[in-house]
Length: 140
Image (tube, rainbow, N blue to C red; front, side, top):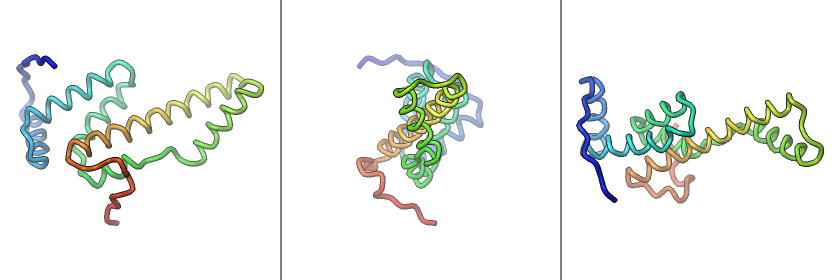
């Protein structure tokens, strides 16, 4: 893989937050910034701005919160409704109102999966085995 060198001017407060995060991770600031930029670039084309911003900010979360996010699921009632709409769509089609509801629920499902994936990536970068998301139960 080839790389490009970039000079980046950051506000002091932003740099200090990144430096603190890098220190907690015991990693160089350059590595933390590179990973954040790579993650942001991957999401830039297909994800709404608010979600892109939230995913980028996840790098600053502690491990316990990331584990919770990695195991997050769509609320059961909404997942059941989405499945019901998919079955109904196959059987007889959906009304315009149901199509709108299906789009919203499918978007929520996609966002949930993106958050889980980002949390798993960050945990893996921090040295955790994320093959079994139930392995870590944060203290209450």
